Image 1: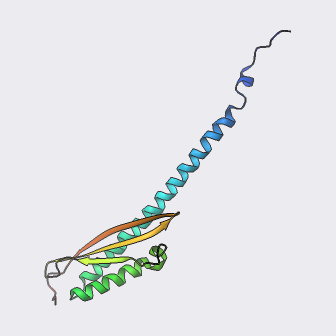
Image 2 (image 1 turned 90 degrees about the horizontal axis):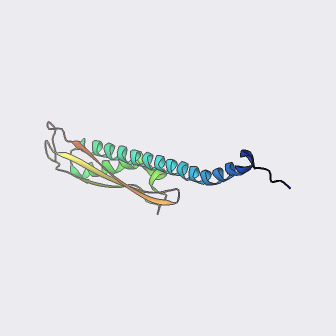
Image 3 (image 1 turned 90 degrees about the vertical axis):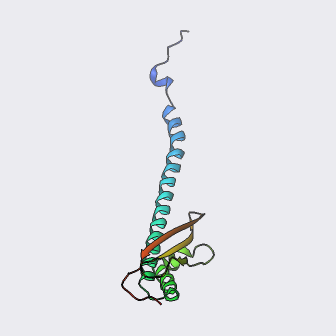
Length: 138
């Protein structure tokens, strides 16, 4: 009985299946990573926008106490309970500072913790806004 030489098709049978079995999980992990990075970037942008708005709102006030309250309200209005309350029921935390004098500045640091795809992510962003040099301060 003569042995027939194997053709190219017979020698490579099943190779495509092996390639798919190896490549499919890698592509799935890559897609999930890109999706997660997109969610994280969106959250970071929202928190930065809230910090900027809080600083802007605080810098428009005439006293540091009112400025802190207004900054807190602005950050809560921007982010609200839908962004930051996934972990522990917490609203965004706002810390204010700066030199609240003429030609000074007002800073608002917003901290937001959120559960993103089962991973707890804390984002901290700071907004700075100058005070108007021609207005009264108390």
